[in-house]
Length: 329
Ligand code: HPA
Ligand code: ZN
View 1 (cartoon, rainbow, N blue to C red):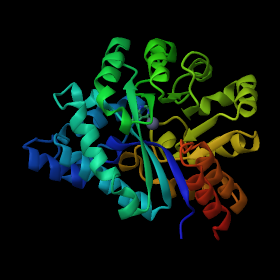
View 2 (view 1 turned 120 degrees about the vertical axis):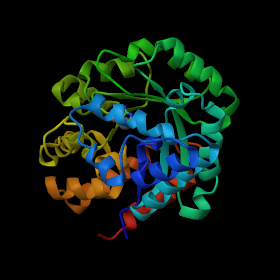
View 3 (view 1 turned 90 degrees about the vertical axis):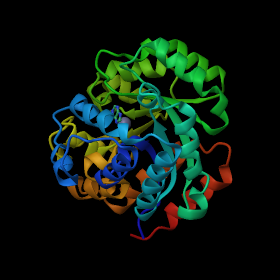
View 4 (view 1 turned 90 degrees about the horizontal axis):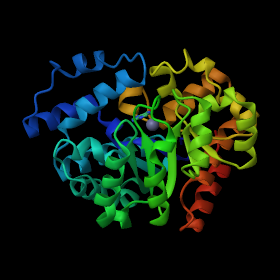
């Protein structure tokens, strides 16, 4: 039995495996510039975040219909369940679809058709988090939130992703204010490629409750102290960090040092189809590379459920936490 965990940092478009990409391309009459899945996998050698994003946005053009998004989420949930995921807070990038003529309703309704059955089929509770692309304008983010208004009963929160450097959190002050007014939870990617100051800004200007990645906070001891004091969860994605060259090898990952510092770190897969593994593979990777023991692994899993947006269902959170305590390695 895998360690039960909540996955809090997962881009649904980043779960598009080559086989499904080719199947959807054929169904939708899209021509991919790769001969086959092996040739596509060859392209999964990234030098930085942007080199990954270029392929990520290119490949998701095969997603066109509600059924495509349903199939995408079903495939993720099945793999996630096999690796211990009990609760998933799933990011999606509406602007990456609306910009090519796929309405936000197609995306939300397609994903929801899968998520509505996730508990019964896969034993996974779910939430949806709408992410704004930070390399697009603040006006585009506001228009996206406006377009999402008919679907807010299905959306738990907002996030911020895509190319980080040069697009500081403060650019999105207005849209996060509006999100807060609408009662949405707030998270943001910060401190992946961008500096520690972006983590601070995401907290101070955007009012985020969790930081996605955040590993560069380790360059700023005062910030670390604050994150510990304010119990801000950080959603780490170790295999992603290696594949996007944020660090050289898993053995160089600061996760252990972050745990030792008292940070509320969690383990997640980010874009598992591209980065070589789902959440259990990320746990196994850091366990082996950093020599984590059972109590440290249990702490990581406990953090994930404590940091989950389950405030509307505390009995469920308690059940998940009890599963973590009862887990035998
Ligand atoms: N960072 C920023 N944007 C992203 C990522 C990521 O790791 N994955 C998908 N969009
Ligand atoms: Zn991410």
